[in-house]
Amino acid sequence: MCKTPLWTVTLLTAIAGAATAANAAGVDFDKQIAPIFKDNCLKCHGPDKQKGDLRLDTPEWIRKGAKDADEPTLTPGKPEKSQLYHRISLPKDDEDIMPPKGDPLTKAQQELIKQWITEGAPMGGGEVVVPKADDKAIAKLHDIGALAMPLARNTNLLNVDFRAVADQIGDSHLQNLAPVKEQLSWLNLANTKISDTGLKAIAGFPHLSRLHLEKTVIGDEAIEHIKTLKELEYLNLYGTKVTDKGVDQLKDLKNLKRLYVWQTGVSKDKAAELEKAIPGLRVDTGWEAPKIEPKPVETPKPADAAAAPAPAAAAVATLKPFNGDKCPLSGKDIDPTKTVAYKGRLIAFCCNNCKGKFEKDPDKLIAKVKDFKPAPYVTQFVLIDAKTDKPIRELKDGDTIDLSKEPKELTIEAKTDSVGQEIGSVMLKLNDEEHLEGIAPYGLAGDDNGDFNAAEILKPGKYTLAANAFSAEGGTGEPFAPTTISFTIK
Image 1 (cartoon, rainbow, N blue to C red):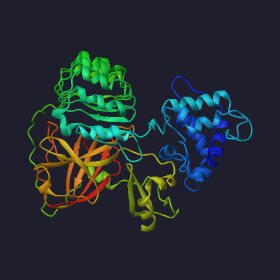
Image 2 (tube, rainbow, N blue to C red; image 1 turned 90 degrees about the vertical axis):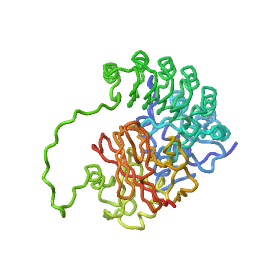
Image 3 (cartoon, helix red, strand yellow; image 1 turned 120 degrees about the vertical axis):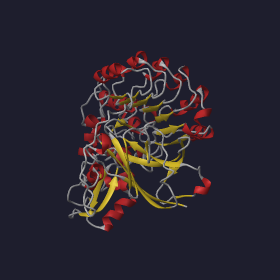
Image 4 (cartoon, helix red, strand yellow; image 1 turned 180 degrees about the vertical axis):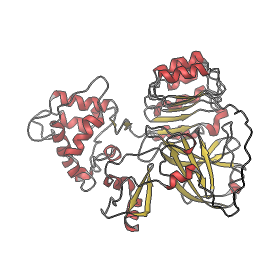
């Protein structure tokens, strides 16, 4: 048996002093586990020191485990394959038991840790750690034309998008999702040929939070399967055959925040009823033409008058650093011009040296920002065939788009991570051109039908694209820090 890493001594000794018990709602990481790490472990396993190459200060580092361990520290859902549980449940006289000195953990404490791991080892405000998806399963999804990629950096949760081959996807193809059941978080089946019965293939998926079914033929029978998705936060039923009878079954989905039922059989009364039944739910029943009112005659402004900035742009310009007035790396006063956007927050530094260090390894150094909490942010940009609404590939900083090798009409979509909060709108700014989107997908240009076409904007040249989320509609509410890339079109 491999020797015990030093980090385990610190971790499990701390746990031994915690007299906690699981309850019917499940083990709460924030209340029962994270305080143990913070108070007892971070001196040796925090941002300044990492014995055994283990950090326990953020969910990202916890899921990585001990770098040189022969066996995984934590295998979500499988306590029998987690060294964390194995070591604390060994017989008292075993040389590898943890903690190595003093009394072993009580049976109740062992069962608490076992239950937490069995539940998927959720941590950090509901963030769930899942094992990496099987490479063969991902390859199979790619083979049938799906775009399958991590939902964000440092997570094994997946975003699977079938729009590129929507007209070729039917019920039988959904069986390919079974091997990634634990990892699937976002699923886009818009415009596919799936049926009510076909959706049985995704029933009960434990982490599916976002589901696009717009412009499919599904009806009320499909809701029988959808209502089993207890973590669902976003559901798009635009252009389907769903009626009041169907959506009435969604009342038990207490995590649902956005429901789109434009051009369906769902009435406004039923939409209002659902919003009352599910706290925080917003049901979008579609756009209605406003009444045209006579416009008052406006006095022309002088030609040299400076235009006031748009409310959204002005809000972003006034973003304050999350870390206040001190550099998180040096402790010196910040220079307001030395900032980095990280997971929806603006982090300011004292100099270019500190700023550069952070940019090289932000996931490690963010631990130096006291009490950091992410905000809704743009995780990536995706190049889209504007004529078919199908994704082509991820657009990264420094990329070059060769128009001779791409579809004639292109646009770009911003993919977001709400981190459990409300996204009211997203502003995209391409050089000096601004566009505000209120409904996902958040595209560079759009119209009332939800289609996107920026062909008149994307011409040969050099571009900077920034996109940021707002907590309310119309670029209002709290603004969050933008994600920015630069690219060239030739």
